Length: 160
Ligand SMILES: Nc1ccn([C@@H]2O[C@H](COP(=O)(O)O)[C@@H](O)[C@H]2O)c(=O)n1
Ligand SMILES: C[C@@]1(CO)OP(=O)(O)OP(=O)(O)OC[C@H]1O
View (cartoon, protein in one colour):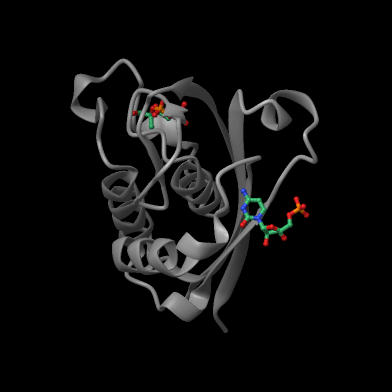
């Protein structure tokens, strides 16, 4: 019988005026963008943490320190590829991923197909096994004021 594990991930990044905004490997047209040590791709970070959590392999900052110059400005899709490699070494394969972005603007919906394609390619999974959703924060709090962006993800992993 195969073994199944679920995982949960969360990430938040500050939004900065004039900064590029990368989400799911797509550069979004917006006056501000998520800021971090890497490309601050918040949905990919939440997915990495969900996968690492499911495999009980610590978290993204443990594997990719924000003090390490190797990861400065790196595409988070490359970090996701590393995470998938770590799971594969332990015999884990990804079942499915479901992720949610909480962001006031811009609209995410038009970009969901491209994001799914990027994440599926980096994770080596079928696009059918990755779901991306979005919500505003109804203009409340730091998300509502456009000061930050949040993402959540859950995943299922399996090993024979
Ligand atoms: N940044 C966002 C936020 C929301 N959406 C889509 O709009 C729908 C309505 O959002 P509410 O927060 O008003 O419920 C939501 O269900 C998403 O489909 C989006 O694309 N980008
Ligand atoms: C991805 C890493 C590494 O570049 O940096 P950030 O882009 O700042 O992202 P965060 O989600 O705060 O933590 C993980 C990191 O160590």
